[in-house]
Structure formats: C-alpha cells, structure tokens
Length: 603
Image (tube, rainbow, N blue to C red; front, side, top):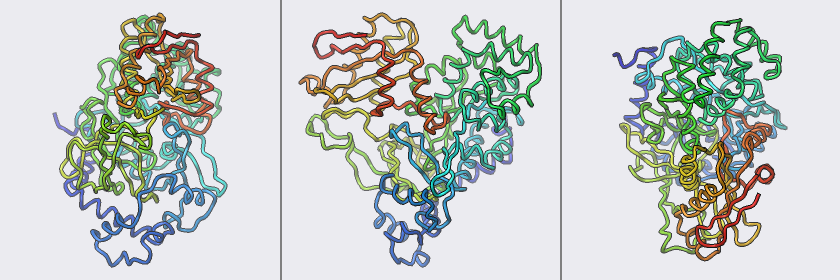
C-alpha cells in the first residue's frame, strides 16, 4: 500500500519541509531567534535588556549568545504588567513591534486563575501548520478518504473586550473563528460535522448535543473522532448515554429537541442540515438498546463503523480518562495529539501508531526559540530540611535545543513571535530520543507543585499514581472513578491531604476504607513518609462526592470564561469556591489508618 494515499502532494511537501528543518534544527533555532529579535528589538521590553546594541550588524550566533546572557528568564508574573498595559489600550511597542489586538485567555484550571497571553496571526498560522503536519504523518499510518467527515467535539468560549478594546477569548476560540481553521479542513480534505454556529454557540451542553446529533447524521462518513482533550470526548459520550433517545427522535423527524437546544442560531444552522431519516433513526435506536445492556462498551465503533482512530491530547492530566475512553472506543487506536500550550506550539507527534503512554513530541524548531533548564532530583534521604525548596528539582543553566541529552529532564523555556521572552512554561519534559537533529520529548508533568503540607513534595504525576492504586481496588468490585481532585488542608494542625472522588457504582464502606489506606501508603515521597510516621502530617482523608459534582465544577469554570475545549479538571485546588462545591457535595469521609490510628468515617 502507498504510504501516502490521501492529499498526496500536500502531505509530501509538508513532511519534506519538516524533515529538512529537523536535519538542521540547531541552525533553524538560531535563525528563528534572529527573526524574533529583528522583528521586535525596538520594543520597550527588549530595549530594557539589549539597550542600544546594533542587532542588524551581528551574525545569528552572536545574537543568540548576547540574548541568552543579557535577557533574564521570566515567569508570567514578570511579563504580566506589560501585558496588562497592552490590555488597557497602550498601543506603543511594548512586547511586539506590531500592535497586539487579541489576547488569549488560559483555562485557569492549572494555576487557579486565568492569564492573558498575546495572540497574533502567527499563532493561527502555526496552529494550521502543525495540524497539517500531524495529519500528513497520520495519513501514512491511517489513510482516510478525501472529503470524509470528522466528529470534532470542539467549543468556542464567549469573547469579550478589555478596557482598551482588545478582543479576549481562549486560544482555541480564536483559532476556530480564524480563516486558518477553514483552510485546515480544505488542506487536510476532512471536514467537521458541525457548522460554526454549533462550535461557537457558547453553551457547551447545547453544542455537545448538536455535535452528537450531526455526528450520527453523517455517521457513515466519519473518518475519526477528535477533541482537544480526551476529557471532552469522555464527557460527550457520558452525555450520549442520557440523550440518545432524544437524538434518535430528532433524526427520525428531522427536528431539534427544543429543550436540549434553545439557541436560535444553533437551531437554524442544524435544521438547515438535517432532514427526516426514519431508517437511520431505527438502526441507531436498535444499536443503542443493545449497547445500553452492555454498558456502552465499544459504542464508538458500533455507531461510527468507518472511524479509523480517536485523536486527542492524552498525556499528563488526561491519562486518568483513558480507561473510560477505551471503554467507549473498544479496539479503535488512540492517537495522541500534538504538544503545545496557550503560549506556543512545541512538538508534533510523528509516530501516530505509538500508544499514548509512549507518545513523544518532536520539536518543530521554527515555531519558537526553545531553551531547556536541566532538572535534577534532590536526594531526599540526605536532605530532609527542604521546606524552602520550591519542588523536588535542582536546576542547571539553560541549554539550547542542540545541547539537550537523551534521558535528561528539563523545564521548557520559550521565546515567541508573540512577545514572550525567555518565558518559563512550567512543563517538565524528558528527551526520549532524536529525530535527525531535533529532540523527541516525553511530557512528564507540570512543574508547579500541587501537594505540600510540611517537607513533603508531591506532583500531579505522584497523585495520579496514588489514585491509580486506589482505583485498582475499586475495579475489583466493578466500580470506577469518574473524576478526582485534591487539596492540602492546613487549616488545622497537623495538616493533611484530602482526595475527592466521584465514583460510579455501589461500593461498601470497608472497600473505601481500604482505598483510603492504600493511597496514603502509596505516596513514596520521603518527606511525606517521614512526616506521616512522626504525625507532622495527619492521616489522608478520602471524600466521596455525590454524582454530578465534577459537572458542577466544569460549569463553574465555563461560566467564568473557560472553553470546554480547554477545560482540565484541577488535580489540586485551593480555590475557595471549588472547595465549597466539593465539601457541600461530599457524602462520606474516610481517614487513613495506614500509619496507625483509629478508623474514622463520617457522613
């Protein structure tokens, strides 16, 4: 079989372009930095650090050396005063020579608050470029029909204006409304099932209903199912379990349920597409009745028989959803989507046949200028006095892309075309290998520490491993975790960890006691173990939530400007509104006996 059977010339050209820049990635990085500096060296921020240097008379290597020695590493907090001036209407060249007219809003689910990030035409263009590149590599392994459909669970948030008149929305919202999104469909020869009115409808529940309805109307044409995050696909099919009968009625009659969808723009756009189809409705209805008895195992391939794979971000905080997604997807392959952030795209998945747990992301060296801060773990047993340490890592000086080493972990640093200079992204990555001259990265975790009470230091990945140990006990009694989060409770001494679970299925209290004890005993951080043994950290508390609690949390974030496409359940929270929701919705509490102490359970 031909390796490239779909959109052959376009695929060949973009892969050839990438292979060439990957071969000379170090040079591509140096030239990328030069272009960024040449475009913006007269800005207020760069003049502060580079002064009156005559950049145009220097070669690229000299610029790189001076830039990395004179411009300091920066966090978002360092750049925020400049960004807020732009938001307030200051159109002078502060961060970029060209005026910034649009700001992206981060989801706020990682840091606990939303942040402004500059968004320019370059942001949309690199998004188009990485989508085309990833599609070209996927087509080698999973050829799709030209003109086929894609069932995309994508959502735009409502846009707003700053005091200075700049447009504000999530990065995904800006992209879905851009010309590049339309070009992407034409270039990749695959078209979303839903019209723009559904994507930008502003109410994720109504949009999800329409996505599912139109996905079934075009079910024989759907080539793959996708969303930004795996969470959104799981959420959509959880909804489908509840609304499938309404959807079948709408397909049969060519109508749109007036209770499920109230938006007039959405209704008109969908009703212009659908028409009565009793035979399709009957086929879907019969399949759904059979699937309901089987607890919806393999619903996706049963209803979308021509789908080739599921495509989404599946690493990091999305890993806990893969078990449920596998339940819905049956044996359909999972393809991990590419690696990026609100600030910049980083790497493309050129090995789409790799399972998510082995996914690597090959850095695209023209998107931004990348630096890597080498990270080394503390020797915990020789360094118990770590209360002043930010996390478990010690740092070396940043190195350029061309100097990274296989097996070493790094924090990513970005210099972007959109005005972020030596910006610490906060992601921990590990170099898995190289593709020619550019590194292939494993995403490890967010660097920001999420759980600490005393000298203990536990990351999101540590928490995920612990929760997985508890969920293994649940699975033995045919129950499962719907979602989870945590909180470091230091209101009373000794402080302790609180883990919140929403579960599906009936579970005896003795099993939940065992889960609580197992999780407490599974934290391997030396600081945590020592603190538990000396009772300077109290017993872990497991809170069982009523069903639907995490939907309330989702509604809270979406109601405050986050887009469904960008939503990630916060794995640790100190947000008082969320804690009120969690505590009001707690129906049972369990306290660990892993390190001694009496059993304590309360309703």
